[in-house]
Amino acid sequence: MEDYFTPASDEHIARQKDKARDLRGSQWWKNRRGEGLCHYCGASVPPRLLTMDHVVPLARGGYTEKGNVVPCCKDCNSAKRNLLPIEWEEQRARLRVK
Image (cartoon, rainbow, N blue to C red; front, side):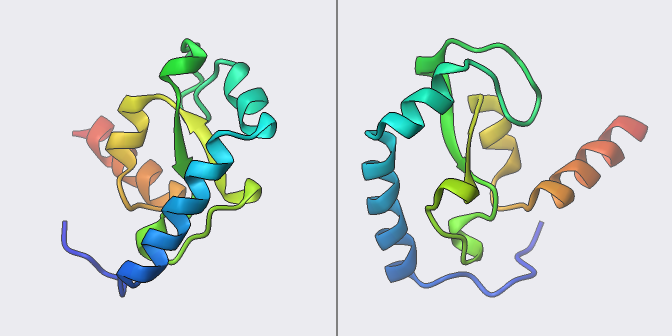
């Protein structure tokens, strides 16, 4: 799939990744991850295996803010890539139909 958006600058992505590192150490994130549920598929996952996903991806100009990050399993995070949730759901629906 080709990019159909203008990617964010490398500087933006680096700055937001630094913020993500800091946020991962916060009690807020530990509480979110501690629930042990993937935001996307709802699977019960050991908290240490949950990853931080940016709902609006950094590559698309998203920010590392509490309202834009969710805990999710590695499979969902890898599959979602740089898609918005609605785009990812549409892609998954097309795959289920085939």
